[in-house]
Length: 472
Image 1 (cartoon, rainbow, N blue to C red):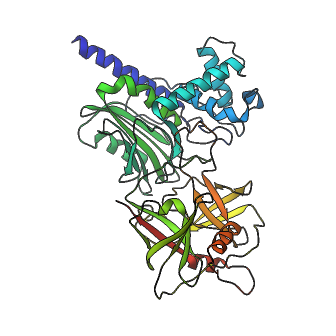
Image 2: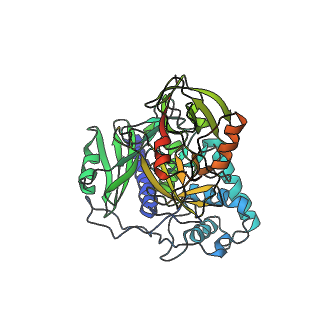
Image 3: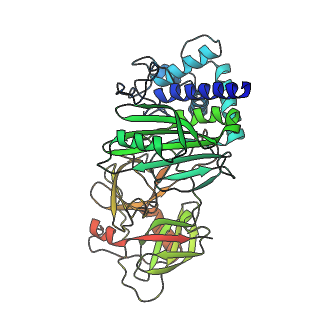
Protein backbone atom coordinates (compact mmCIF):
# COMPACT_ATOMS: atom_id res chain seq x y z
CA UNK A 1 0.00 0.00 0.00
CA UNK A 2 2.83 2.38 0.85
CA UNK A 3 4.55 1.63 -2.45
CA UNK A 4 1.31 2.20 -4.35
CA UNK A 5 0.78 5.51 -2.56
CA UNK A 6 4.33 6.63 -3.41
CA UNK A 7 3.84 5.69 -7.06
CA UNK A 8 0.59 7.64 -7.15
CA UNK A 9 2.31 10.69 -5.66
CA UNK A 10 5.08 10.48 -8.24
CA UNK A 11 2.53 10.26 -11.05
CA UNK A 12 0.65 13.28 -9.74
CA UNK A 13 3.88 15.31 -9.55
CA UNK A 14 4.82 14.33 -13.08
CA UNK A 15 1.40 15.21 -14.46
CA UNK A 16 1.50 18.52 -12.64
CA UNK A 17 4.87 19.34 -14.21
CA UNK A 18 3.57 18.42 -17.65
CA UNK A 19 0.39 20.42 -17.21
CA UNK A 20 2.26 23.52 -16.05
CA UNK A 21 4.91 23.40 -18.78
CA UNK A 22 2.53 22.53 -21.58
CA UNK A 23 0.12 25.22 -20.47
CA UNK A 24 2.80 27.76 -21.31
CA UNK A 25 4.35 26.12 -24.36
CA UNK A 26 4.18 28.15 -27.55
CA UNK A 27 2.89 27.24 -30.96
CA UNK A 28 4.37 30.37 -32.50
CA UNK A 29 8.04 31.26 -32.93
CA UNK A 30 9.95 34.49 -32.48
CA UNK A 31 12.88 35.55 -34.62
CA UNK A 32 15.49 35.82 -31.87
CA UNK A 33 14.63 32.95 -29.54
CA UNK A 34 15.33 29.42 -30.81
CA UNK A 35 12.83 27.79 -28.46
CA UNK A 36 9.93 30.31 -28.37
CA UNK A 37 6.63 30.54 -26.61
CA UNK A 38 3.28 32.27 -26.96
CA UNK A 39 0.01 32.71 -25.11
CA UNK A 40 -2.62 30.08 -25.62
CA UNK A 41 -6.11 31.01 -26.61
CA UNK A 42 -8.81 31.09 -23.93
CA UNK A 43 -9.54 27.56 -22.83
CA UNK A 44 -12.45 25.80 -24.44
CA UNK A 45 -14.73 23.56 -22.46
CA UNK A 46 -12.51 20.76 -21.18
CA UNK A 47 -13.32 17.11 -21.52
CA UNK A 48 -12.77 16.85 -17.78
CA UNK A 49 -12.66 19.25 -14.92
CA UNK A 50 -9.22 20.83 -14.94
CA UNK A 51 -7.21 22.92 -12.50
CA UNK A 52 -6.79 26.65 -12.88
CA UNK A 53 -4.67 27.49 -15.91
CA UNK A 54 -1.11 28.62 -15.21
CA UNK A 55 0.22 31.93 -16.37
CA UNK A 56 0.81 31.96 -20.08
CA UNK A 57 3.21 33.80 -22.30
CA UNK A 58 2.35 36.43 -24.86
CA UNK A 59 4.84 36.46 -27.71
CA UNK A 60 6.46 39.67 -28.88
CA UNK A 61 7.98 40.23 -32.29
CA UNK A 62 11.43 40.96 -30.89
CA UNK A 63 12.99 40.45 -27.46
CA UNK A 64 14.09 43.52 -25.60
CA UNK A 65 17.76 44.42 -25.91
CA UNK A 66 18.09 44.23 -22.12
CA UNK A 67 17.36 40.49 -22.25
CA UNK A 68 20.54 40.00 -24.27
CA UNK A 69 22.55 42.51 -22.26
CA UNK A 70 26.07 41.26 -21.57
CA UNK A 71 25.61 37.99 -23.48
CA UNK A 72 28.05 37.54 -26.39
CA UNK A 73 26.43 36.17 -29.54
CA UNK A 74 28.45 32.93 -29.33
CA UNK A 75 26.99 32.17 -25.88
CA UNK A 76 23.31 32.97 -26.45
CA UNK A 77 22.28 29.54 -27.76
CA UNK A 78 23.91 27.82 -24.80
CA UNK A 79 22.26 30.16 -22.30
CA UNK A 80 18.84 29.75 -23.91
CA UNK A 81 19.22 25.96 -24.05
CA UNK A 82 19.99 25.85 -20.32
CA UNK A 83 17.02 28.12 -19.48
CA UNK A 84 14.78 25.91 -21.59
CA UNK A 85 15.96 22.69 -19.97
CA UNK A 86 15.39 24.09 -16.48
CA UNK A 87 11.83 25.16 -17.37
CA UNK A 88 12.55 28.85 -16.80
CA UNK A 89 10.69 29.88 -19.98
CA UNK A 90 7.32 29.11 -18.35
CA UNK A 91 5.37 31.83 -16.61
CA UNK A 92 5.94 35.21 -18.30
CA UNK A 93 3.50 37.99 -17.51
CA UNK A 94 1.23 39.28 -20.26
CA UNK A 95 3.18 41.33 -22.76
CA UNK A 96 6.57 40.45 -21.27
CA UNK A 97 9.39 39.21 -23.48
CA UNK A 98 9.70 35.42 -22.85
CA UNK A 99 13.51 35.49 -22.78
CA UNK A 100 13.51 38.35 -20.27
CA UNK A 101 10.98 36.45 -18.15
CA UNK A 102 13.09 33.27 -18.35
CA UNK A 103 16.17 35.12 -17.09
CA UNK A 104 14.17 36.58 -14.21
CA UNK A 105 12.78 33.13 -13.38
CA UNK A 106 16.31 31.74 -13.29
CA UNK A 107 17.51 34.57 -11.06
CA UNK A 108 14.56 34.04 -8.74
CA UNK A 109 15.19 30.28 -8.64
CA UNK A 110 18.91 30.74 -7.95
CA UNK A 111 18.18 33.42 -5.31
CA UNK A 112 20.02 36.09 -7.29
CA UNK A 113 19.16 39.73 -7.88
CA UNK A 114 16.18 39.85 -10.24
CA UNK A 115 17.27 42.28 -12.98
CA UNK A 116 16.55 40.48 -16.25
CA UNK A 117 20.24 40.88 -17.18
CA UNK A 118 22.62 38.00 -16.52
CA UNK A 119 25.85 38.59 -14.66
CA UNK A 120 29.07 36.92 -15.78
CA UNK A 121 28.78 34.33 -13.01
CA UNK A 122 25.14 33.55 -13.87
CA UNK A 123 26.04 33.20 -17.53
CA UNK A 124 28.90 30.84 -16.69
CA UNK A 125 26.60 28.69 -14.53
CA UNK A 126 24.02 28.41 -17.31
CA UNK A 127 26.63 27.54 -19.93
CA UNK A 128 28.05 24.86 -17.63
CA UNK A 129 24.54 23.45 -17.14
CA UNK A 130 23.94 23.40 -20.90
CA UNK A 131 27.21 21.56 -21.45
CA UNK A 132 26.28 19.03 -18.75
CA UNK A 133 22.95 18.29 -20.44
CA UNK A 134 24.65 17.90 -23.81
CA UNK A 135 27.19 15.47 -22.38
CA UNK A 136 24.70 13.41 -20.38
CA UNK A 137 21.72 13.28 -22.73
CA UNK A 138 22.91 14.57 -26.10
CA UNK A 139 20.22 17.25 -25.84
CA UNK A 140 19.47 18.58 -29.31
CA UNK A 141 16.67 20.80 -30.64
CA UNK A 142 15.84 19.77 -34.20
CA UNK A 143 13.16 19.96 -36.87
CA UNK A 144 11.52 16.68 -37.82
CA UNK A 145 11.65 16.71 -41.65
CA UNK A 146 8.58 14.45 -41.88
CA UNK A 147 6.22 16.77 -39.99
CA UNK A 148 7.89 20.20 -39.76
CA UNK A 149 7.71 20.05 -35.94
CA UNK A 150 10.56 21.49 -33.92
CA UNK A 151 11.27 19.32 -30.91
CA UNK A 152 13.97 18.79 -28.29
CA UNK A 153 15.43 15.29 -28.16
CA UNK A 154 17.81 13.53 -25.74
CA UNK A 155 19.68 11.85 -28.61
CA UNK A 156 21.76 9.61 -26.34
CA UNK A 157 18.59 8.35 -24.66
CA UNK A 158 16.66 7.79 -27.91
CA UNK A 159 19.35 7.16 -30.55
CA UNK A 160 17.25 5.01 -32.88
CA UNK A 161 15.12 6.92 -35.41
CA UNK A 162 12.81 5.52 -38.06
CA UNK A 163 9.72 6.41 -40.03
CA UNK A 164 6.39 6.20 -38.25
CA UNK A 165 2.91 6.06 -39.75
CA UNK A 166 2.47 9.84 -39.66
CA UNK A 167 5.88 11.15 -38.67
CA UNK A 168 9.09 9.93 -37.04
CA UNK A 169 9.75 7.73 -34.01
CA UNK A 170 12.84 8.01 -31.81
CA UNK A 171 13.43 5.26 -29.28
CA UNK A 172 15.94 3.74 -26.87
CA UNK A 173 17.62 0.45 -27.71
CA UNK A 174 14.88 -1.65 -26.09
CA UNK A 175 11.95 0.74 -26.56
CA UNK A 176 11.89 1.81 -22.90
CA UNK A 177 11.63 5.46 -24.02
CA UNK A 178 9.88 6.56 -27.21
CA UNK A 179 9.12 9.92 -28.78
CA UNK A 180 6.92 9.93 -31.88
CA UNK A 181 5.79 12.90 -33.94
CA UNK A 182 2.65 12.98 -36.07
CA UNK A 183 1.03 15.21 -38.66
CA UNK A 184 -2.58 14.88 -39.87
CA UNK A 185 -3.82 16.90 -42.85
CA UNK A 186 -7.38 15.64 -43.10
CA UNK A 187 -9.46 18.85 -43.60
CA UNK A 188 -12.57 17.13 -42.23
CA UNK A 189 -10.92 16.04 -38.99
CA UNK A 190 -12.13 17.85 -35.87
CA UNK A 191 -9.68 18.41 -33.03
CA UNK A 192 -12.29 17.21 -30.53
CA UNK A 193 -12.71 13.94 -32.46
CA UNK A 194 -8.95 13.34 -32.50
CA UNK A 195 -8.87 14.16 -28.79
CA UNK A 196 -11.43 11.46 -28.03
CA UNK A 197 -9.72 8.99 -30.36
CA UNK A 198 -6.32 9.49 -28.69
CA UNK A 199 -7.88 8.87 -25.28
CA UNK A 200 -9.15 5.47 -26.41
CA UNK A 201 -6.49 4.23 -28.86
CA UNK A 202 -4.64 2.05 -28.28
CA UNK A 203 -7.13 0.23 -26.11
CA UNK A 204 -4.74 -0.27 -23.17
CA UNK A 205 -4.58 3.45 -22.40
CA UNK A 206 -5.80 4.61 -19.02
CA UNK A 207 -6.19 8.38 -19.03
CA UNK A 208 -5.19 10.17 -15.82
CA UNK A 209 -5.38 13.75 -17.08
CA UNK A 210 -6.73 15.36 -20.23
CA UNK A 211 -7.59 18.86 -21.38
CA UNK A 212 -9.04 20.16 -24.66
CA UNK A 213 -8.68 23.79 -25.73
CA UNK A 214 -9.64 25.71 -28.84
CA UNK A 215 -6.46 24.91 -30.76
CA UNK A 216 -4.69 22.17 -28.77
CA UNK A 217 -5.07 19.27 -26.39
CA UNK A 218 -3.02 17.33 -23.87
CA UNK A 219 -3.57 13.77 -22.61
CA UNK A 220 -1.50 11.73 -20.17
CA UNK A 221 -1.75 8.55 -18.16
CA UNK A 222 -0.78 4.89 -18.39
CA UNK A 223 -0.46 2.74 -21.51
CA UNK A 224 0.09 -0.78 -20.31
CA UNK A 225 3.22 -0.63 -18.15
CA UNK A 226 4.35 2.67 -19.64
CA UNK A 227 3.48 6.27 -18.91
CA UNK A 228 2.35 8.24 -21.91
CA UNK A 229 1.51 11.79 -22.92
CA UNK A 230 0.11 13.23 -26.15
CA UNK A 231 0.24 16.88 -27.16
CA UNK A 232 -1.27 18.28 -30.37
CA UNK A 233 -2.00 21.65 -31.98
CA UNK A 234 -4.19 22.53 -34.95
CA UNK A 235 -3.69 25.35 -37.44
CA UNK A 236 -5.48 25.88 -40.75
CA UNK A 237 -6.94 22.38 -40.72
CA UNK A 238 -3.61 20.67 -40.01
CA UNK A 239 -2.83 18.88 -36.73
CA UNK A 240 0.74 18.42 -35.50
CA UNK A 241 1.81 16.80 -32.27
CA UNK A 242 3.90 14.21 -30.50
CA UNK A 243 3.49 11.23 -28.20
CA UNK A 244 5.94 10.22 -25.49
CA UNK A 245 6.13 6.81 -23.79
CA UNK A 246 8.46 5.58 -21.08
CA UNK A 247 8.61 2.74 -18.56
CA UNK A 248 7.37 3.60 -15.08
CA UNK A 249 10.61 2.32 -13.59
CA UNK A 250 12.50 5.08 -15.42
CA UNK A 251 10.41 7.96 -14.07
CA UNK A 252 13.21 9.50 -11.98
CA UNK A 253 15.53 9.64 -15.01
CA UNK A 254 13.00 10.57 -17.67
CA UNK A 255 10.82 13.13 -15.84
CA UNK A 256 13.15 16.16 -16.23
CA UNK A 257 13.86 15.15 -19.83
CA UNK A 258 10.14 14.86 -20.56
CA UNK A 259 9.50 18.36 -19.25
CA UNK A 260 12.35 19.74 -21.41
CA UNK A 261 10.95 17.97 -24.49
CA UNK A 262 7.52 19.41 -23.81
CA UNK A 263 8.98 22.89 -23.37
CA UNK A 264 10.92 22.74 -26.66
CA UNK A 265 7.94 21.46 -28.66
CA UNK A 266 6.93 23.96 -31.37
CA UNK A 267 4.39 22.52 -33.84
CA UNK A 268 4.50 25.36 -36.37
CA UNK A 269 7.95 26.99 -36.06
CA UNK A 270 8.53 30.22 -37.93
CA UNK A 271 12.31 29.81 -37.80
CA UNK A 272 14.32 26.75 -38.72
CA UNK A 273 16.53 24.56 -36.60
CA UNK A 274 18.88 21.86 -37.94
CA UNK A 275 17.01 18.88 -39.33
CA UNK A 276 17.00 15.61 -37.43
CA UNK A 277 19.36 13.04 -38.96
CA UNK A 278 17.54 9.84 -39.87
CA UNK A 279 19.43 6.75 -41.01
CA UNK A 280 16.89 5.40 -43.49
CA UNK A 281 17.24 2.17 -45.44
CA UNK A 282 15.49 3.92 -48.33
CA UNK A 283 15.99 7.68 -48.58
CA UNK A 284 14.55 10.12 -51.08
CA UNK A 285 15.91 13.39 -52.41
CA UNK A 286 16.26 15.42 -55.58
CA UNK A 287 18.81 15.71 -58.34
CA UNK A 288 19.29 18.10 -61.24
CA UNK A 289 20.12 16.76 -64.71
CA UNK A 290 22.95 18.97 -65.96
CA UNK A 291 24.13 17.37 -69.22
CA UNK A 292 22.78 15.57 -72.27
CA UNK A 293 25.09 12.68 -71.35
CA UNK A 294 23.11 11.92 -68.19
CA UNK A 295 25.11 13.78 -65.53
CA UNK A 296 23.16 14.65 -62.35
CA UNK A 297 24.16 16.79 -59.38
CA UNK A 298 22.62 16.18 -55.97
CA UNK A 299 23.18 16.51 -52.23
CA UNK A 300 26.27 14.52 -51.30
CA UNK A 301 24.69 13.25 -48.05
CA UNK A 302 21.96 11.52 -50.06
CA UNK A 303 24.56 9.38 -51.84
CA UNK A 304 26.47 8.18 -48.78
CA UNK A 305 26.29 4.49 -47.85
CA UNK A 306 24.02 3.59 -50.77
CA UNK A 307 24.07 0.11 -52.26
CA UNK A 308 21.98 1.38 -55.16
CA UNK A 309 21.19 4.92 -56.34
CA UNK A 310 18.21 5.32 -58.67
CA UNK A 311 17.19 8.34 -60.72
CA UNK A 312 13.43 7.82 -60.90
CA UNK A 313 12.28 7.34 -64.48
CA UNK A 314 15.86 7.24 -65.79
CA UNK A 315 17.49 4.22 -64.18
CA UNK A 316 20.42 3.34 -61.92
CA UNK A 317 22.92 6.12 -61.29
CA UNK A 318 26.64 5.80 -60.60
CA UNK A 319 28.48 8.27 -58.36
CA UNK A 320 31.59 9.48 -60.16
CA UNK A 321 32.72 12.42 -57.99
CA UNK A 322 31.88 14.42 -54.88
CA UNK A 323 32.75 17.68 -53.17
CA UNK A 324 32.00 17.24 -49.47
CA UNK A 325 33.09 20.79 -48.61
CA UNK A 326 30.38 22.23 -50.86
CA UNK A 327 27.86 19.41 -50.31
CA UNK A 328 27.77 18.19 -53.94
CA UNK A 329 27.81 14.78 -55.59
CA UNK A 330 28.07 14.08 -59.32
CA UNK A 331 26.17 11.07 -60.66
CA UNK A 332 25.67 9.67 -64.11
CA UNK A 333 22.97 7.56 -65.75
CA UNK A 334 24.36 5.57 -68.67
CA UNK A 335 22.63 4.38 -71.79
CA UNK A 336 20.32 6.07 -74.26
CA UNK A 337 17.81 8.22 -72.40
CA UNK A 338 15.79 11.33 -73.07
CA UNK A 339 17.37 13.91 -70.79
CA UNK A 340 16.26 17.50 -70.11
CA UNK A 341 19.50 19.10 -68.93
CA UNK A 342 19.49 22.32 -66.97
CA UNK A 343 21.40 25.35 -68.27
CA UNK A 344 23.53 26.82 -65.47
CA UNK A 345 23.40 30.54 -66.15
CA UNK A 346 25.98 32.97 -64.74
CA UNK A 347 23.44 35.53 -63.52
CA UNK A 348 23.07 36.12 -59.78
CA UNK A 349 19.81 36.53 -57.90
CA UNK A 350 18.15 39.92 -58.28
CA UNK A 351 15.88 39.61 -55.24
CA UNK A 352 15.79 37.81 -51.91
CA UNK A 353 12.60 35.96 -52.85
CA UNK A 354 13.08 32.27 -53.65
CA UNK A 355 11.00 29.38 -54.92
CA UNK A 356 12.24 25.87 -54.13
CA UNK A 357 11.15 23.24 -56.66
CA UNK A 358 11.45 19.55 -55.88
CA UNK A 359 9.70 16.24 -55.32
CA UNK A 360 9.01 15.48 -51.63
CA UNK A 361 9.21 12.11 -49.88
CA UNK A 362 6.42 9.83 -51.21
CA UNK A 363 4.93 9.60 -47.70
CA UNK A 364 4.48 13.37 -47.64
CA UNK A 365 2.92 13.42 -51.11
CA UNK A 366 0.68 10.33 -50.86
CA UNK A 367 3.02 8.43 -53.18
CA UNK A 368 2.96 11.11 -55.87
CA UNK A 369 5.99 12.19 -57.94
CA UNK A 370 4.47 15.60 -58.58
CA UNK A 371 6.72 18.66 -58.31
CA UNK A 372 6.11 20.83 -55.27
CA UNK A 373 6.96 24.51 -54.86
CA UNK A 374 7.96 26.01 -51.50
CA UNK A 375 8.29 29.75 -50.97
CA UNK A 376 11.36 31.01 -49.16
CA UNK A 377 13.77 33.89 -48.92
CA UNK A 378 17.54 34.17 -49.17
CA UNK A 379 19.40 35.70 -46.23
CA UNK A 380 23.10 36.65 -46.15
CA UNK A 381 23.72 35.12 -49.56
CA UNK A 382 23.38 31.46 -48.56
CA UNK A 383 20.89 30.94 -45.72
CA UNK A 384 17.41 29.91 -46.86
CA UNK A 385 14.46 30.71 -44.60
CA UNK A 386 11.12 29.08 -45.36
CA UNK A 387 8.06 31.32 -45.57
CA UNK A 388 5.88 28.65 -43.96
CA UNK A 389 6.77 25.80 -41.56
CA UNK A 390 6.26 22.87 -43.93
CA UNK A 391 7.59 19.28 -43.91
CA UNK A 392 10.84 18.96 -45.87
CA UNK A 393 11.35 15.20 -46.00
CA UNK A 394 12.88 14.18 -49.32
CA UNK A 395 13.33 17.77 -50.50
CA UNK A 396 17.11 18.20 -50.25
CA UNK A 397 18.72 18.72 -53.65
CA UNK A 398 15.76 20.71 -54.96
CA UNK A 399 16.27 23.59 -57.40
CA UNK A 400 16.20 27.19 -56.16
CA UNK A 401 14.77 29.96 -58.36
CA UNK A 402 14.98 33.69 -57.71
CA UNK A 403 12.10 36.17 -57.82
CA UNK A 404 12.30 36.30 -61.64
CA UNK A 405 12.07 32.52 -61.94
CA UNK A 406 15.75 32.02 -62.82
CA UNK A 407 17.81 29.13 -61.53
CA UNK A 408 20.33 30.29 -58.91
CA UNK A 409 21.37 27.04 -57.24
CA UNK A 410 20.44 23.93 -55.32
CA UNK A 411 19.15 23.74 -51.77
CA UNK A 412 20.77 21.58 -49.12
CA UNK A 413 19.26 20.48 -45.83
CA UNK A 414 21.66 20.41 -42.89
CA UNK A 415 21.29 17.81 -40.16
CA UNK A 416 21.78 18.51 -36.47
CA UNK A 417 25.07 17.97 -34.73
CA UNK A 418 24.96 16.37 -31.27
CA UNK A 419 25.55 19.58 -29.29
CA UNK A 420 22.82 21.83 -30.64
CA UNK A 421 23.58 24.57 -28.12
CA UNK A 422 26.56 25.48 -30.29
CA UNK A 423 26.03 27.93 -33.19
CA UNK A 424 25.46 25.83 -36.30
CA UNK A 425 25.40 26.18 -40.07
CA UNK A 426 22.09 27.26 -41.64
CA UNK A 427 19.57 24.38 -41.53
CA UNK A 428 18.68 25.08 -45.18
CA UNK A 429 21.31 26.66 -47.38
CA UNK A 430 21.87 27.54 -51.02
CA UNK A 431 24.62 25.89 -53.06
CA UNK A 432 25.03 28.54 -55.74
CA UNK A 433 24.88 27.93 -59.49
CA UNK A 434 28.42 29.29 -59.66
CA UNK A 435 29.65 26.62 -57.21
CA UNK A 436 27.88 23.92 -59.22
CA UNK A 437 29.41 25.22 -62.48
CA UNK A 438 32.88 25.13 -60.95
CA UNK A 439 32.29 21.58 -59.69
CA UNK A 440 31.20 20.41 -63.15
CA UNK A 441 34.10 22.16 -64.87
CA UNK A 442 36.58 20.50 -62.51
CA UNK A 443 35.24 17.14 -63.70
CA UNK A 444 35.03 18.12 -67.37
CA UNK A 445 31.26 18.07 -67.63
CA UNK A 446 29.93 20.39 -70.30
CA UNK A 447 26.59 21.81 -69.21
CA UNK A 448 23.67 22.78 -71.43
CA UNK A 449 23.38 26.26 -72.92
CA UNK A 450 20.39 28.51 -73.66
CA UNK A 451 20.17 31.09 -76.43
CA UNK A 452 19.36 33.91 -74.00
CA UNK A 453 21.60 32.77 -71.15
CA UNK A 454 18.62 32.49 -68.76
CA UNK A 455 16.97 29.16 -68.02
CA UNK A 456 13.18 29.36 -67.89
CA UNK A 457 11.20 28.03 -64.94
CA UNK A 458 9.79 25.27 -67.16
CA UNK A 459 13.33 24.21 -68.13
CA UNK A 460 14.32 23.99 -64.48
CA UNK A 461 11.27 21.89 -63.62
CA UNK A 462 12.03 19.49 -66.48
CA UNK A 463 15.53 18.88 -65.09
CA UNK A 464 14.43 17.93 -61.55
CA UNK A 465 14.43 14.20 -60.90
CA UNK A 466 13.68 12.17 -57.77
CA UNK A 467 16.74 10.37 -56.39
CA UNK A 468 16.41 7.18 -54.35
CA UNK A 469 19.18 5.77 -52.17
CA UNK A 470 18.84 2.14 -51.06
CA UNK A 471 21.01 1.18 -48.09
CA UNK A 472 21.39 -2.05 -46.12
